Image (tube, rainbow, N blue to C red; front, side):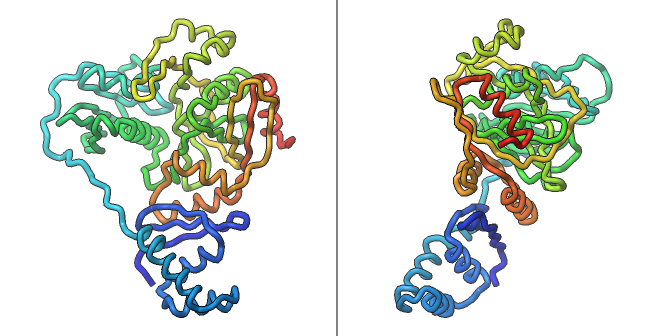
Length: 378
């Protein structure tokens, strides 16, 4: 048996296979997954080929060709350990002056954040500016963001977290939020299943994840839903804990694109005077809308994924989505913990959720349909 793990989870007539070495997922036929498991167990190719030939009644040479092709084109490449370059942040001179020092009040945490330059603050501060506090209470954590050798460096409590180039700035933004989550909920990174690029909408009992490509209306839908009685548990960066498979709160602001401002203006008059930000990488102009997550809700279970899409002049369409398609759309935009135990928990959770597609053009009908989703009137 090989040293690395290979985990499988059946979904419908397919199987999800996870390779520990490369931390990659593959959705494949059940028979193919079984062969991959046999290869991982160290069973001889000749025996695997003979078993395959006998089970599907094909000549042994054809069965062996399939096994060897699978081994060399899938099993071996995906089993290779991917080495991630870790930026060296241990030897550098820290700034003596900080252009912006602020404090974020999140629950019982008061996090001091020091930014060397204003342009570094612009990478993350707008999403958390509504959490600023002028209190002088002791900080539970100190974040420091500065530049070194054209890289953005993040330290938390004097410990280097990482360094990222200009092209990797979205990784820095994700890591900054991940560090906030760990401080807020007092859970280290190993205790999180992962983070989903989604909007987590909640009532008092449960949450639903709304997913979709950029421009499909996720954030606009979330803003409309929170104006109509729902809670924004998290937007864009939705964390799930391994302990209970619950979605946890992250009170970052909702990013609202320019074409959505007129739609949301009747519900959020403050948007008219909100600061505008030009996101150069995506060439979008946005304003930030604070979430309404002022309740005591910190985490809730989630057993529904809804892939949402605004489509002009479309009648409302709501239908079940195959888990295979849902999984293949979920994984590319998600960070899933590479720890085998967390992967096993994630796959078990995913196998239990229901997946849907919601397409709409009428906001009132969308809100009505979401009420039905939460009340199980499907």
